[in-house]
Length: 208
Image (tube, rainbow, N blue to C red; front, side):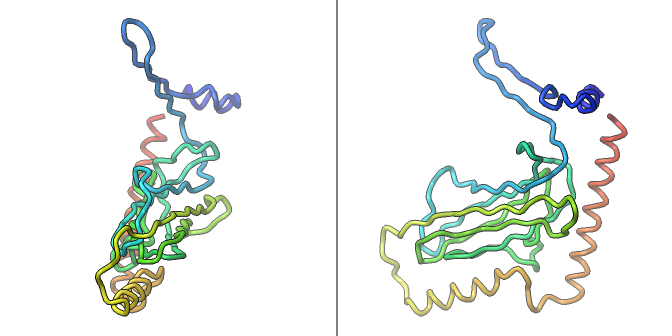
């Protein structure tokens, strides 16, 4: 209720939780958390510990998409689904058949795995919301640079090219060959997840 009153008074910046760590009565660490407002954009980052990916055909990077407000505060309770797309020397380890692309948002974020090819360069990953609307969060893009492998690959170049071409086809956003039954199951699971999240949001609203 305190947060709602500050929002009505247009004092959004005054609504926050601040934790302080003290040693001998002196503040040595702080952590500030702001409540999230209306979701307006997607955030996209690589969970790679700041280590550059290697173009050796097997290096994998985890990319995280998050739904946030204008100030970058992640909206933990939402029922969006994220569609991932990729360009450049890389492949998505995700597809519709495994329910990993599009991927439902859980607790504000949705991860996807990106694998490098044997060609160094820049991989562009794009994340967008599946169902577009008037207040749809803005899409996000991420560039992942890859470096040349330190050691030469011991493999048949033709086999490598064939494998990479096959992976690109398999990681396409629309999966040819998915049966109507599988699509229907996927749709029902998505609807169930949305209903569960709406119920949680309602309970939170009633609590407030």
